[in-house]
Image (cartoon, rainbow, N blue to C red; front, side):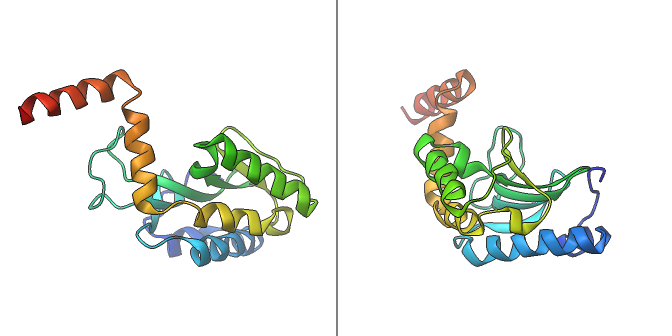
Length: 164
C-alpha cells in the first residue's frame, strides 16, 4: 500500500482491500472505545490519526496536529502507532509485558507495532495504552520534551523575555 491520499477516514477504509479493512477496523474499534476525550480522529501522514486538535495545541514542531496514535495499512503489514508507549520506559515495559502475558508475539518497530491480523495483537494492551494518557497530560509531556531541545529552550527564553 502506497501512502494514502484519502481525505477522510471513510475514504481510507473504503480504499483498502476487504481483508485489510476488516483488520484495521477491528483495531480502530479498540482505539475508539478507549480514546480519551479531547483527541480527534482524522487523516494524517497518510494514516488514520488520533491527535491533539490544533485548537488545543496550535504550535507543534512540525506544524501538524500532535499525533497520539495512528493506524495504517502498510505495504507488507498493518501498523498501530502508539506514541504514549514510546514516551515512557515504564509504559513501554508494561506494554511489552502485556503482550507476553497474553501469549502474543510482539512485532515492534521504532514507533509502531506491526501486525497482519488484529488477532495477532494483545488488544487489551492496545486499549490500555490508548486509555493511559489524557490530552492534557500528553500536551504536558510534549511541552516538557520540547524544553529539552535547543529550539524549545530558545523559544521559552524568548517568551520569558517578552513577559518581563
